[in-house]
Image (cartoon, rainbow, N blue to C red; front, side, top):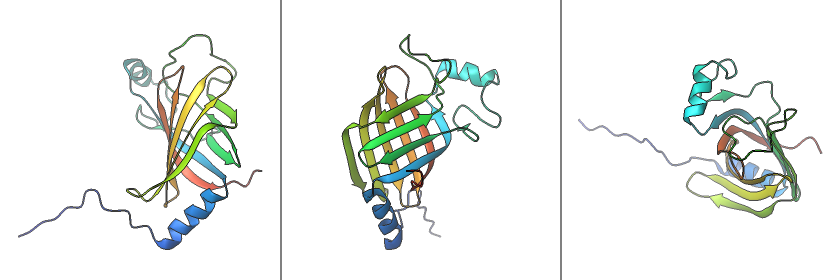
Length: 171
């Protein structure tokens, strides 16, 4: 008896799926809306999760973002984002009680969009500063339209957001 297992099958994107994603990204008018977040697990975050302070139905590895404004928007040469933040702040002095999330809007530096042949989609990366904090952003956008956005910060620990990419209808 012979058994086989394909634990990491190759991406089987159709030419139509690739063309759809290519077109969406070439127009540089798209939005990634996040459904859930995954902060860097730390002892402090574990204590918050154990105290029941995460949103209902969430765990430390999967925080539900339903009902929040969670997006990364690319519009021409500009990018803007608004994500709730869950994690540890590393530098004092930037906490804003009215908006403690990750927020930026402007023209990024080092913007790069390159094909990801291994996973069948694209990798996007850039740096941006909102006046008080610098962000290093990378996103994996797959032909299934699922996306992972990873945000590093000069003042906070790393966090990932998972969601879907679509055409930007809000111009």
